[in-house]
Amino acid sequence: MPPVKHRKVVMLGYPSVGKSSLALQFVKGDFPKEYEPTIENTWSKTFVLGNDEFELDVVDTAGQDEYSLLPQAFIFGIHGYIVVYSVACARSFHIASVLYRVLVDKRGKCLMPIVLVGNKTDLPEHNREVKSEEGKKLADSWGAAFMEVSAKDPEKSKQIFTKIIEEIDRVERSFSDEAKKCSVM
Image (tube, rainbow, N blue to C red; front, side):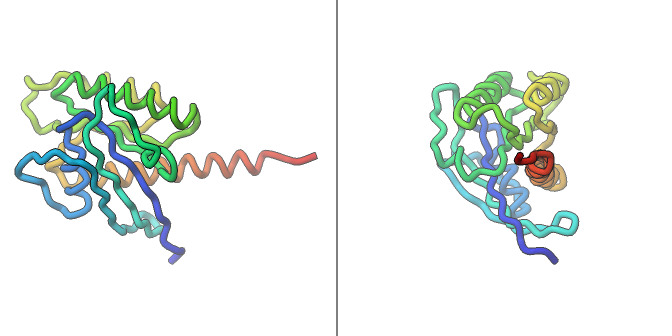
């Protein structure tokens, strides 16, 4: 088997959208029973995807709003981003857009591996404030992957982290493909 690939991703989103629940479901297979605001945690998990083994560090951040400053540690040395909103909270969807603009301001308009996640699909339909089509449209405008999930579903949580690894690899391959096209004269 090839050497272990290390990847670091940051989870961003409005407070109480389920970032920690998604991370804990993936890393520990556990859905928290009570809400506890996160200051910041980093979780690690080794897993196999295809023929590759990954050591994934997941930075679970405190919730952000439009006035939050993203520390440099969330910009440099990061391979990808998971931006989470709640399908039952239009404000959290708005904040997802703001966070993307902040990332572009700090990182530049470059290929940036992102998965936009609409969480809390297990809530009753009458609670929904953000339509699936709106999430898909926003993700498409970013060039990002899009998923709707419930953190209560371990398989869906795993799919988010699988998708971000795939997105990171896709972006890395595009850079290496571009380098192959360059020639020095």
